[in-house]
Length: 257
Image 1 (cartoon, rainbow, N blue to C red):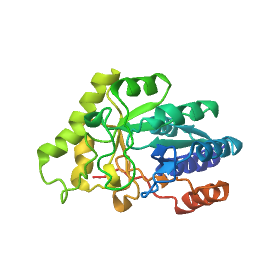
Image 2: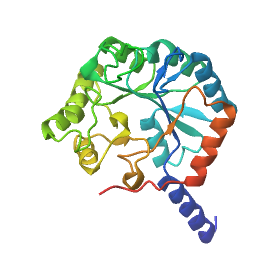
Image 3: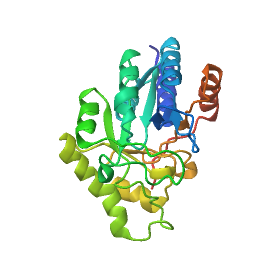
Image 4: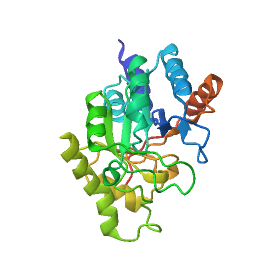
């Protein structure tokens, strides 16, 4: 390849790696009739969404795998799939569908609430969370395990002024998951998608390699990855529109200070 063409190809590849990847954000899978926060997708809808990805030639993977593939220039047909809160229905309902359609995902769990419930939600049904055995079973099924903190607390300075609490939520949750699975998690997910520079630096200092947010704005980077919310209302046309919007926005993935 001529030098000029090679330079252009390299520049395009570098530019692609600087654009935030497309990462989809799920929560619970199950009955959607009592769902005040719109965090639940039915198994039928999830199956249709995963099938749509396959028809488009896209493969859903955990965020850690996605970022490694991006670094190698091999992520063009990959999509990040994430499931927040570590609901037990991830293992019972999501994992079989993911495997049926050839996908994997990252599940962000709460090691301080093992076998507990979503007590942070004031309304709606109580949903059981994964136990330690459930987390290990999800990992054995090929899913990436990430931390969602200990107790699902807002980690911003306004909500969590105590540095000890921040450390427990970020660093201690990582240590507990290492004890459960035998491997320290690479990824963290900010509860409620809420973060500020202090929370971001705590995650980076705890030796995570990436973190997921929702719409982090100017903090967008490896420790504040934006994600697209996916719910029961996301039919095929809506998924197509969200993917198109992602490509149009092309959020830069800089390295935060």
